[in-house]
Amino acid sequence: MRAGWLVTPPPVPTAAGYTFDDLLLAYLDQVTPTKRAPERDRWSAKALFPAFSGKTLASIDGAEVRAYIAKRTAQGIAAGTLNKEIGLMSAALNWVRRELDWDVSNPWESRRQREPAGRARWLTPEEAAVLLAEAERRVQRWPWLLEFMRLGLYAGLRPGEILGLEWSRVDFDRDRIIFAPDDQKNAKFGSVPLNHESREALMSRARFRSTWCPGSSWVFARKDGSRIASVKVGFASCVKSAGLADIHPHDLRRTFGSWLVQAGVGIDRVSKLLRHGDVAITARVYAHLRPSDLSEAVAVLDRTGPTVSRSGFTFADSSLNRD
Image (cartoon, rainbow, N blue to C red; front, side, top):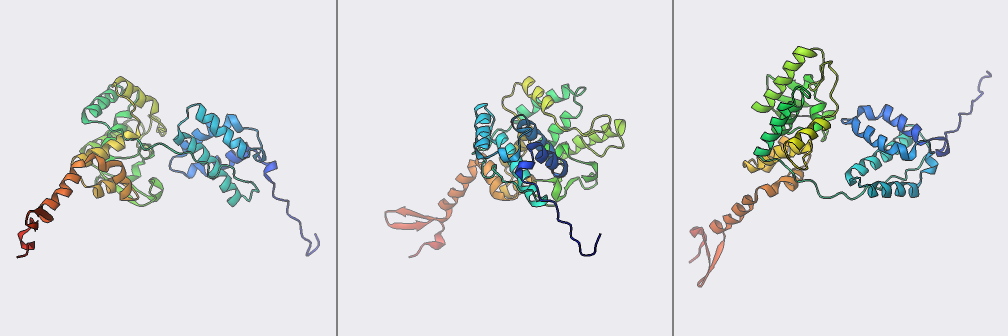
């Protein structure tokens, strides 16, 4: 090769050279495994695959995306589920453009659907007792399900946080579960205190581990030590047998927050226990459970504010009245 001879780099392929399959294979292989809940991407990819597999990215334009959204909506797919599918495609396209220099457009951007108001379902203590009893009755089939429910109800953990929990983050000496930024939704360091019920749930899992899989790093593991990725089937079975309606795994965490607020714990403290990024989120979801707070707040004015009488304004605090 002569000195100074330059080799012209191959041109970067355009969308016409890439397919939907190329896109998702790259994203699911390199990005999805780094996420806190990688199974969400895989579920979304499974839904997208029948509609777009084999198609070039150039052929998937705005009209194609709108048609897909309309079809999924007509099928009764919830807006939240559909938004995860839209979000996966948009994130994958932005990633390959930024990191792999693919010359592709993103027709999925800004296509999120309006979602209904957040769920307000939480369990009463009586409902929770029935649900836990059903899980205990199925302990031979799903030996992890009872402890999953207890950690949701008494520690307020998200379902993904429970199933992704590793023993290295459980501190029995200080009765804490430790969170690094990658472990929780707010992407911050934090911890969750263990009360009696949540500690006992973890101790039960520790005994299971000691008996069956002492080398496993996962708190929620099978006998062979492999991680449990989902509790949907067992959870739904217990909900049905308990005679409960419209209960999802995340409702355990919502119940935790609801019970605290109803017991008189302040919104600020509940927000910290739930590890919300903003106390306004906690207030929006839970403040209505303590309407008495508002009554108590306005009653303060009966003690300190001016009142109207025939002789004019007077104050409940006599020191404020003038001669």
